[in-house]
Length: 182
Image 1 (cartoon, one colour):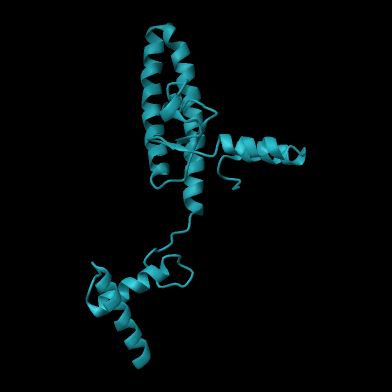
Image 2: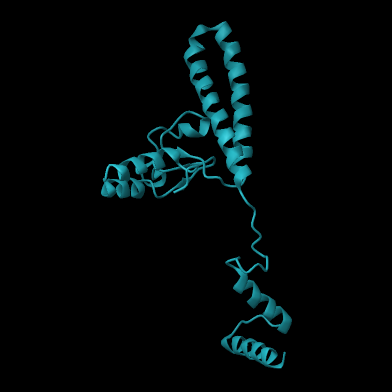
């Protein structure tokens, strides 16, 4: 398990393993094994089936124990966008608080959300910087799709895309003939 992805879960799992509670550690992982994608990040709780008891407060930057960044493409940009939006909200709340002190609680809550979003943005940018881009169309032998790409290239050389079983046999026969002659 990665140290960068769900670090709290990793620490809890490692602690249970050290205390020889392998069954509890396995149960912990199974409980959090499925991620449910959200507009920003993901939830380790089955929000589709059971809903969110916190009304998806994580989407506005408030802390939630079930929320995690996933490292998806565009997540760092989304964190930055939400952070700038939160800063604008706080400016408005400060103006309202000056006129009416009853907005103080809302201001404190949004300032807490700002701190959380700043941390999430930092984590998202860090995760994005550590990623390595891999071309799925490369001819590299380490590419898991290399054999599929070779087959597609062979079909293009023969000039026929298989639509029937006879087409597959024709392409395979041409490939065998080419290998025997060349």
